[in-house]
Structures are given as structure tokens and as C-alpha cells.
Amino acid sequence: MKAYIPFFLSLVLLVSTQVFAHSDHTHPDLTEVQAISLAADVAKQLSEKDVGLAIGKIPESWASVPNDNIAIHIKGNGYYIIAVGNKIEKQTLYVLMSSGGDVYDANFSGEFKGLE
Image (cartoon, rainbow, N blue to C red):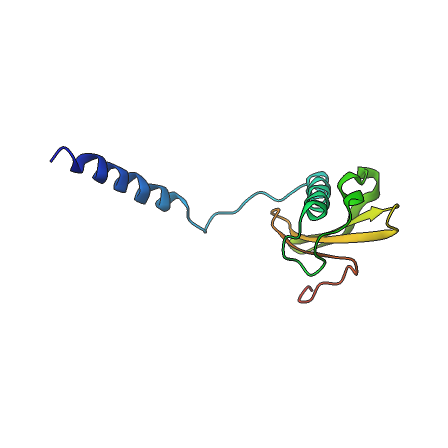
């Protein structure tokens, strides 16, 4: 019987954590400064490895784009498109993210299907 107690305790703890992991809560919206910082992080990550987006792995120079070269391109209803300009590559990376901080896509055109 004593051998079953740790098993049941583990099961109860596992189930109780699932109760708190519900999807009906909201996250606070990012500030514009936070959105710009997140876009810089995305550019750095995309320069380190291919994360499965259509643009693949981008050159390493994207890892050190100064914040002065990053700006809000579009602030839509529930989303941001952030422009990350790279003077070395002479390109602009556009990062689509939710206002809550979920990154959806990135490309060099700034056009994303399905946005209003």
C-alpha cells in the first residue's frame, strides 16, 4: 500500500497542473518597445538556425541589427508588423506578431495573407 501513495500523489499533482493550464485567460498586450525588442530577438534567432519559415536561415548580420533600425511598420487590430532594417544586407525583415507576443511569421515583403 505504501508503494501506491507516491504514484497517486504524482497523479494528483499532474492532473492539478492541467487544471491551471487553461486557454480562457488573456495575456497583457506588448508595449511598442517590447514588440521591437521581440522582433530583434526573432531576427537573431533566424540568423542562428532555420526555424521552418519560408525565408529559412538568414545571414548572421541580422543578429546585431541596432534597435535604431527597428520600428513598428503596422499596428493592426491585435497584431504588430515590425520592420527590422539591415543596412549591411540592404533589406528589411518584417516580423508578424500578435499584440500578446506570439510570433507568427517573418518575411522580406511585409505582406502577410489573411490580415485585415
